[in-house]
Length: 112
Image (cartoon, rainbow, N blue to C red):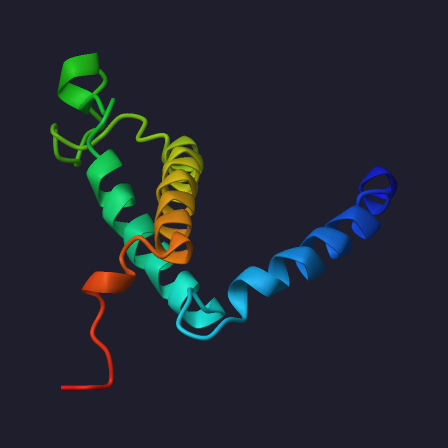
């Protein structure tokens, strides 16, 4: 725990620097960024669930009273970490595209 305390000032400085990117008019705000991150995280998570799963029948170790098609070792923590990494990359791409102003001509304005 003590070794992580050395990173605390750096983390605070980084958050203060990044604050300028999140608190903007018409940009990616904190709530918008969090909602997009969570929706994409769940989408990627459900996409990754069937990857690498072997059933009890395939491994030959069927537990009595259970479905033979039930997963033997679903590796949920590993999938959650890979989902978080993939979502972070996708969210950074979303953030850069939104903040760069490339999509600005296609965004609706107040004039109808």
